[in-house]
Length: 221
Length: 365
Image (cartoon, rainbow over all chains, first blue to last red; front, side, top):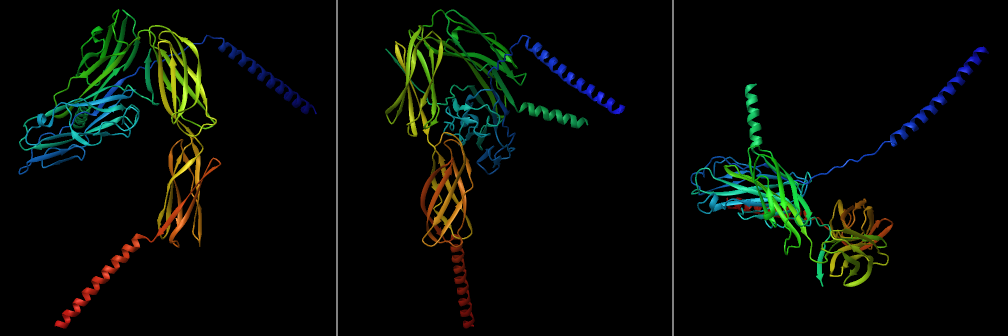
């Protein structure tokens, strides 16, 4: 009997202590919250500056030293197929890889430094480029459709005038890279020695990102 | 170990030489013209090759009023552009663009090398004489019995404040279907205000519409318009299989197009193919269709015991609605069987000719 009473007393004391502790904890927490909300608030501001940036991850095409094979009048060098035909230059695959590494869409132009006659000379030389998407959808027109450059994805003579390639050269990762492949026809009577040309990529922030067709007219009285 | 170390350094050098990177920040800045004001813009240029020379220049309108802290850099760095605006720019209202151009000087290269040229635009807006309001209209696609938000953003690009009253007419096939009117208000110089309205499409038919906005500001009227579409809960069957080969399980395809401005999660078809003698019924698996998008439903039909022509009835099911289409399905004997038969006949003829020739030779002996 005595033991039962003692146990009961301990249980009651434990109950009182538990309830009190819970109450004290609750009150302390409320006080803490009111102390925190009583502090002054501040602001965090952030400005992200726009950046135009181009990277040639593959910035040169070099077939090394070679010649047209004996008995042939021309050799053909093609980076798209990665082949050299009727010549002993080292084959090169791919071409120039151009990536938009900025954080805005760009308008991209390309300019060649020389024509085929200036670069190679000889009888019927050819110097052609093929600009295509290395990543799907990288190069678009101003309204998000296929590029207006009529030779996109095809071989055409390298242009020594500025050629508009992409009205919209996208910046999103996975859709921001194009490839410039080259096809050369080197005649046996071409210029000799170290021959070279420079392809210039010119870019600026794309002007238009029109979602809606807006036709604007102004009438002045 | 030494050889490996040298090889690694060689490879690193090769990798370094084969890439070229150039960056310019900020890419675009916009300022309003204030007579006699000095504008300073600081540019940062990123160049991954510390030995690459860069040329920096200015092009475009107002370039005579621009001063560069540097005309050349080696590797990356900072350039400060200072524009001293004149007290008067004469007749040059609107956007006047100045281009800050950074160009890599190319290295001598064998065969084909590269150079990058980047430009950043500083636009100085010169107010138009008198009053001038520029308007931009945005109207998204919607559905029938829906509320389509209309936004008309107005900016005072003139030299005087202007009282503005505007409305947006909704037209289709040249016919005015309704208007959204906005209350008149005063717009201060360089102030911008976005007017928001709602087009209730109850009673409108699905189709293509033109939102035509008129903004009257006293000295003139700005007019801007934009096309938009009103959809209805309808999925159209644009094409379906009309000929299958006889024999085995064949795919029956149904091309569909949604004319609804919202996504539909489940679109499926119940297909009934029948003639006077027999009937075959099957259901295609469902596909989701995004707003205004196209898709293809695939069903399967056992054509082993089928031949000739059958009537096709297709019932499309989506969001509790249905579309019905009918047509003709032809079951033709497999062209492969015909080819095999023809080859067999040819072989048989060749064998026969060979046998006849052999017999003749024996007779001659």
